[in-house]
Length: 330
Image 1 (spheres, helix red, strand yellow):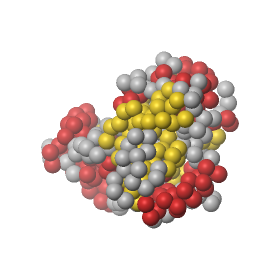
Image 2 (cartoon, one colour):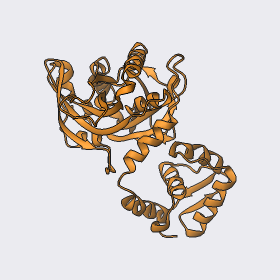
Image 3 (cartoon, helix red, strand yellow):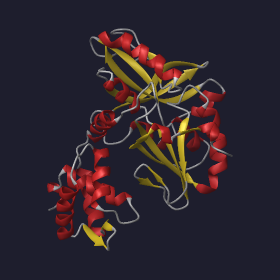
């Protein structure tokens, strides 16, 4: 079974094993497959693992479960290279469906971005991110911090690193979807801030047809000016452009207010029907939404010279597991 024949289930299993430093069994694999929108019984997972063992992509490790082999890693890499380029939009749709946040109780799952930075920079990183988390340019001030060897959802923090999880902006998609509001994710972009006001998008990357997260591209390209935007009121922040049907506008405004009251403040602007918002024209019979990028605090770290590794749309996790940034001790 070469990578050209690798189906969605097999690819997801190899991805799960590739993230792990320790063996895991069929029960845990079945649980984590839900993050990929795949529902399989333990028995079905064992069937796929048997085939993967026969092909040399995985191997048993005592009673603990399976690990991915070097051959499996190579095959996974080849499969990802040829994977459908619209993968990012497919991932957005899958994770939107898996969001279960209840706005009244703040219970349920939200989508997380997971980033890593060197452990030696921990205190410096917290000081840099503090004003960002107090600004309007974040999804929420709630985060998860973990040390090496600990887990954020199904992701293990690498050696010598600190892991930080921030609320992903696609959580908004999930909240609207649960309320019966269809939403289209069109662009990830850089929005200009002038005199503390959002003025226009200066750069846009379409989600459709992209295999990379646009915001990570902007971070890697050192195009953000999040620190300046927060401290001086002039800069460039990560934001995305979404569209909603005109008939849903009042409901979206109501949900935006409810989210803000719960300190989930990701919706930065709601446009007028059929009119441009920050210079972007929505489709016919639609209005635009501008949503803050969940990776803005991480962009600030890169601006300050702290290297990061970012995984947008990384995992889902109960919102109750996240703590306010100000409760994270220096």
